[in-house]
Image (tube, rainbow, N blue to C red):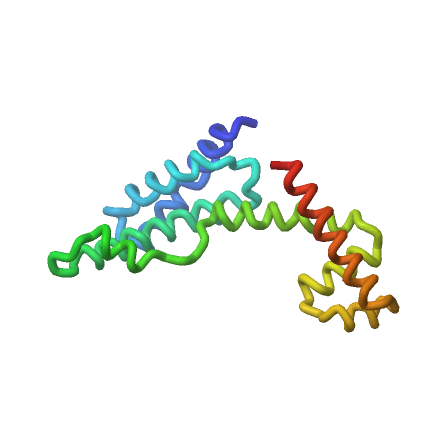
Length: 168
């Protein structure tokens, strides 16, 4: 099904619930409709086929928009300060929902590549990069030499890099 149809159907189906949620965020129905409309515009621009929980994602967009507008209104209250300068100094370092979804997708691809490697190589990479074990600890667990363990990890990482470069 077309991405726009999916987002429109989601909007129609859950509009009342979204308005209630937005009303709780904004403190009343006056600004709730604007918040839902702004969130829907952003949501409609996303590729909804890649979103596993669209209702939660939509609510996250609403919450982020509300928090941004609240921060912005607080910043505008600062007496005669340059708004652009103030915004630049208090930027939210948290990644956007799109960045999170993209990072998860990339991590899943990487894990699939590692899982397709020979068992010892995949295990060595996971222990080194995800569990934080040292080479000698990995070598002891896998009953290998430290130099061979280092070679396994280096070859696996190179393979992951090559596959990622070909996918770009």
